[in-house]
Length: 177
Ligand SMILES: [Zn+2]
Ligand SMILES: [Zn+2]
Image (cartoon, rainbow, N blue to C red; front, side, top):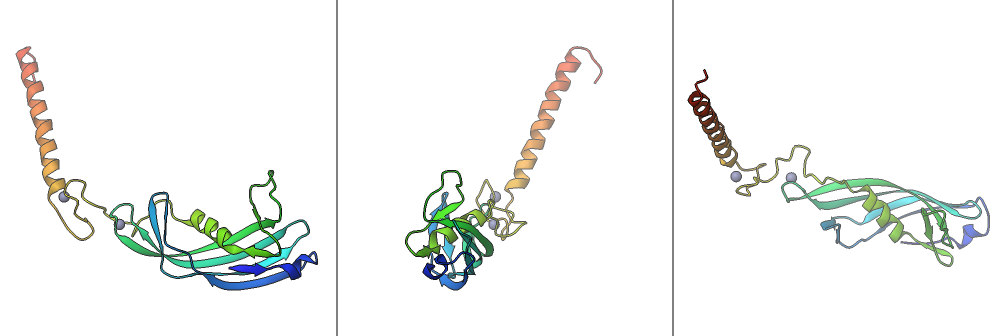
């Protein structure tokens, strides 16, 4: 989404509204797949504040993400703010500045950067996702397995046999148990 800012560059204080959609391609980010189920809807305004342009806006999109617990794909609506400073030159003292060239601002990189910041760190299909059974791999949201149970029983057996061993050591020393 390209915005022509030539008109507001001439006058400090001048502002212009924008509204539109942009298509982003499905991607893999930090090893996780991010699918775009809708274009990103973007709206806001850009104001000339002298040395810089200020961008204020909001964006919404429907994403398809992969649950970190059960690896199922799920949909997630995401809404996020876009607040950025735009300049023709990079400022080493201000890492928050986005550089634009000529009289146009390309919103794609800006929107993508804010979108990636907004992604949930822990992607869960639902807050109470039960995940996959670590032993048989079944999806515990939909299926039940006996792995947990039989494992818990084994652990109990272990504790019992260790106790027995301890008891016999103690009684061999002639102590009351
Ligand atoms: Zn899940
Ligand atoms: Zn299992």
